[in-house]
Amino acid sequence: MRRLLIVLACVSLSISCKGFPQTPSGFVHKSAPQFVRTDLSGRKIDLKSYRGKVVLLNFWATWCASCQVELPRFAEWQKKYGPQGLQVLTVSMDDGDAPVRKAVRRLRLGLPVVMGDARLGEAYGGVLGLPVTFLIGRDGFITAEVEGETNLNALESHVASLLGR
Image 1 (cartoon, rainbow, N blue to C red):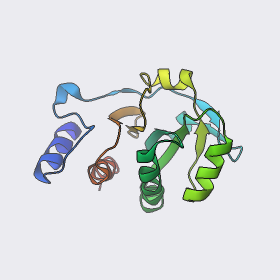
Image 2 (cartoon, rainbow, N blue to C red):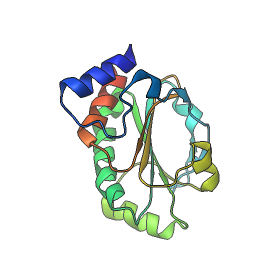
Image 3 (cartoon, rainbow, N blue to C red):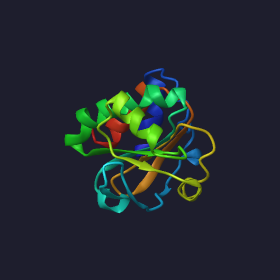
């Protein structure tokens, strides 16, 4: 039913749903691979501790222009939808944390940022291009995967639908 609502929302709003599967057979619905990492502020980030929330998990890098556009919007969504159960988690695929810290300060993200690596990327099906965003439902299952630049309005609509709005 949720899948049908997403497709109908995309069609009825005439929004380009780039990155969103258009047919039920193409929908992602698998358990999100678990991970535990330390974020840039030293806090332990354990994905399973967010069960019961909708998680927007974004893989990005400082050299990725599209990422620089998306990240501030994701930070806005955290403020807007956080009280309703959204948690935005970001994974930098940069080689070191110095440029990441600089970008986080410049963008004023205020979001958990963990450092990723090939192993974490492989767990999520191989993160080859950036950005890549996964929406994880309250049940811990991936409901959507968006590769590359996306229609942020369509993505926000999907987030809102997962939150029950």
